[in-house]
Length: 184
Image (cartoon, rainbow, N blue to C red):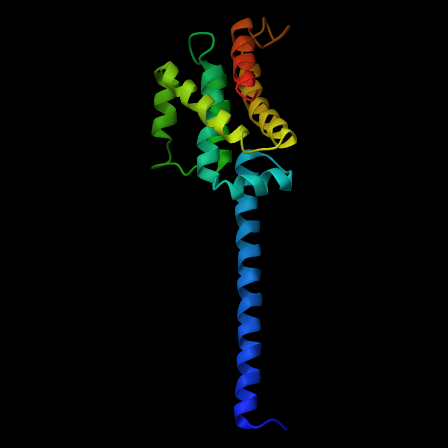
């Protein structure tokens, strides 16, 4: 039977070990929560890419805002934002996890009512270029695929003639190609 001093030492060792295990568990849980939030916002399910974004301190809100710029850019490609495009973008914002302000997205709605200047797309391209420098080629490809799929959804929301033919206009195709080049 250990003495009181020995028991205190043993308890202390186990307490420290328990604390370390608890801290490791908390960190894993926090990472899983952040991963789940990023996955919900981005639509990315590849855990390697999600973990890399977390390592780069990209949170769900930052990613959601970054993901909306290509959508707005594609919507303005033909010179005005059509109702169907607006609806797809607002739905994407709601699904992205961006918290609305009083049930609205004031900045996004401003972008949909007044064509943002070229500096917005330039800032987005700069952000993507910097991010791509920190990602592996497969991670870049997955990110590009996810973001451009959302933008294509906007391009396909309206257009075509009587519901026939390609719904993506040549101006929208040009914008999509320009956005894709940002990942190179």
